Length: 221
Image (cartoon, helix red, strand yellow):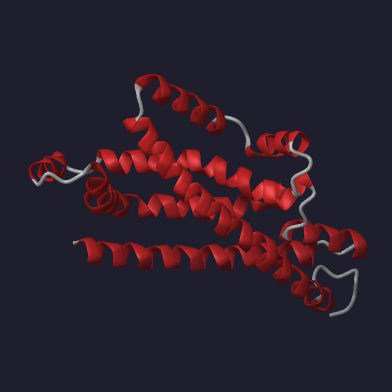
């Protein structure tokens, strides 16, 4: 239907879909993957630092972590954008999103580590295992088994938060939909298609996370 006065136009839908998919694969997906890697690694470092560092350092880490968690992501993006204005917005946004979600993942890691039975710690001591070996071979694998669903949920949340990057001039998928709508005076097709792409990608991500969870349960059983 080509009537621009109708609710839906297949012509506009087919015209905007390639641009939306391009932004999804080159911006939205890339930011989510790299941001998730940053968040997963930094979150684990934060969790271990809070547990192992001397009390003053642990308290400082907790203070910074809570500050990041309790302020909106949009505010953090804008602040970083104006302070670090020489950094490319896409790079800056990816790092900020990764840091933001690292604070949430740190809490997930902490809960998973605390859930490891005391007997596991005692067994590593009895076997004279080094601290590094204890963490990498015993504690972290068991913690990951119980925390993977929560970590996956945060990755999906990060994926859905990528539209906030438009506030620092990054043209991701939703911004591309807005631009198309403004140029052609047709917003419905672009916004609906962007939403459907998010829905499909989120659903597939949840299925992948579930498969990884089952695999981890099997390999660590």
